[in-house]
Length: 235
Image (cartoon, rainbow, N blue to C red; front, side, top):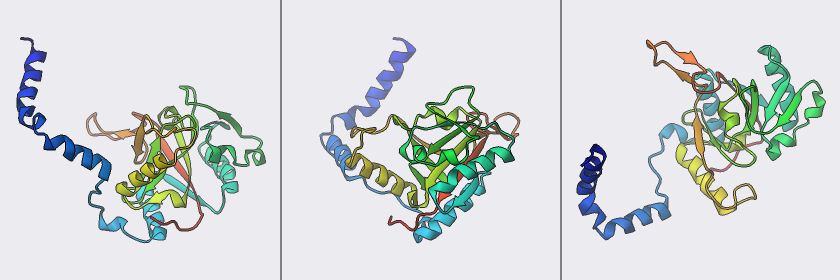
């Protein structure tokens, strides 16, 4: 018997009683259908306006930069300002998402907007986010035809555009919104879960080598959020 066979034999022996228990499959099916919620920290159970402020504070504590604007029309100007601050070229690789495609890019004619998935040569990407989680300042991102995952991780600078109403209190609330979207599928989802759901909390970083923090080890070294004010939302 090979080492692989021994490992699987041990696993089968350990699972023998549970596999043969007829109540176990029913319990698993009930849990999947019922979506029971785990504990939500008290700090996330606050009015939505406070959730927005908490999300911004948590994100900025993790070296994320945030611009808050009064309307979507102000987004291209804020993005142009970001590029100027960091001495970056004016070329943007943008997700072909309806929110981003509707922005008045023509008001900033020096910006070169290219739509499509991320490429190794791209320095700056612009994407939407599905949700922001106030509890930890985390972005919830998913893959789809209009939100290629490569834009989240390949370029050095990841710029995210989202509405305040997309901010939730905790992780459980964000997953509830994802399930609601599945209940009313659009063309890009076709009623199926996205292939990937990623949670991003701050820029990519590691301290694996001698405990020295390094930014950009596994993804973008800078994360910038442009947050559009649109009033409170019900959670």
